[in-house]
Image 1 (tube, rainbow, N blue to C red):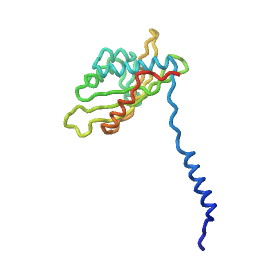
Image 2: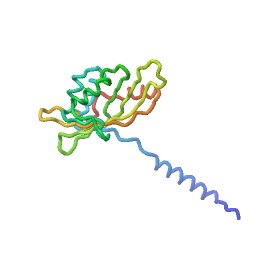
Image 3: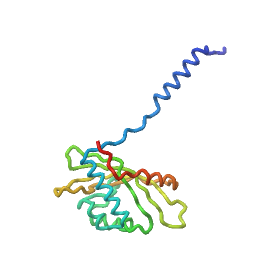
Length: 183
């Protein structure tokens, strides 16, 4: 027995399927809007990234809490400002690769002196013979405002970078916002 759908029912089903598909399409994410204090953390995150871009080890260390833990999700995080700064020496020097990052979101915790910051990161391999120049990952940092009022990184971690094209690296750079999107 062959089953056929009347044309009016078929049109209704196609119309419904199109509407259902349109309803399931995800909406564009709402842009982040941050408070003035969250924007302080945003600016501090940009300053932290700038310390690496400018190969300034002292400025880098000034952004790190004395008892910080980097690689926080790892079984053996790197602990303490001095140890972290030493471990980051090669990254800060920028001789083998450049590391860039910027925040896309900062959020203040309920206690007011803890903040979370996240965004993308770009690794550029400087070896002229490399076959894969760019990789993009992400970072997650927890900041703490000390009794002196200065925000410093307490915990830091990231997402392993994946290979990307020059166009994707250019898009990363174009996405950087110096100005915090305030509420």
